[in-house]
Image (cartoon, rainbow, N blue to C red; front, side):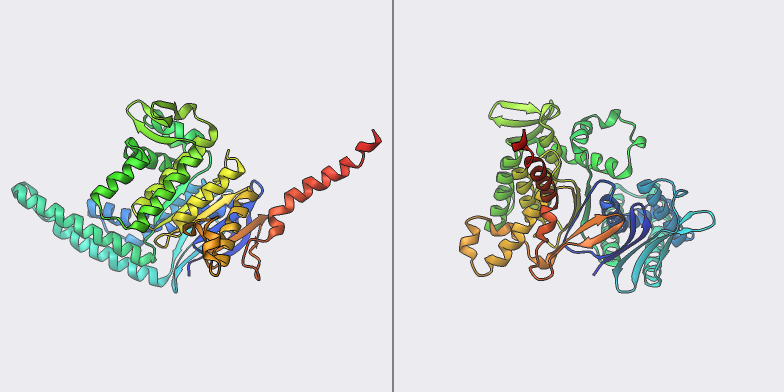
Length: 436
């Protein structure tokens, strides 16, 4: 099992946790929720950085000191994620991918220099991959392309494409991680509007994860020139999809339309949410809840539609949403998390998010012996096995597992703490009302 260790980093004093399929982090602002999520994403997406490093080394035909150069890539990625390291002291970030295969980040004490460290097994397999790509690069770059026919060039490029498809697969095997990594940051209402103006924005002033998110939605927006229902009809025509897959996609569309209170489409005149056939509101004039939730919903739909295996970090899915709508968005997240070994990591301030997950855990538990009755209320595609989920409370640099060990659900007192405080204040004040 993958494991993340964080010591003395940001608000986190000490953390040691196993990576499960669904992970929830709740706590007050600045308690370290995003620090944990970003750090997990940092390590789990290194497979993509390794692939890019090998491809760029191939293009330049430069394989001098490959492990040292890759360490520089990791160091630069850390600085892009977290900024300068001069304010840090005695940090340790450690991620275990498999037995004997790990990567850690430490700080060189004298100069406070970010130092990646790799396990011996990682270095061994990394060097094997680098040699393989280097040998192929030597053969490729030794060719005199000016003397080749167009057919020869096409054949060479086809072989190159196949070769790097295999290299990508071997990078995934090295990390034992084949999930597509997707980070959905907070502040999506602004980002949803800015994505249409990306060409006019100096992205050097935007943090790496937000920039990557903007680029992703800019790239996939044209996919939604048709409505989700039209896309599903088209998919049925083009592919022989199973009845179960068809049911899941229909369920996803119904949930998305319920959350958006309409149907999303993007065309030459911009992004729109249709309330009726010819009645719509442009996205930049839509409600903040619609803007905040839109690209969570659409990205989840793509993952579901393409049957991808993904690792998804979602910051504050509850933002600007009514509690009932928060429940619906959790249903959609559960639908995706139950597919193809996907993983979801969520940061939240909302007890309604935790309560919604609790209902899905309980539905799975009770549904094992009362399936027909439970599915009348909650669709079985939403049910969550308690073994696949964990939840943590972050407070004062400490992390606490809030899953009840006996009941296997999120501890009820964690859902009620704030309500109890508010009610206690109300009761205290109300006792004086009769004295007026």
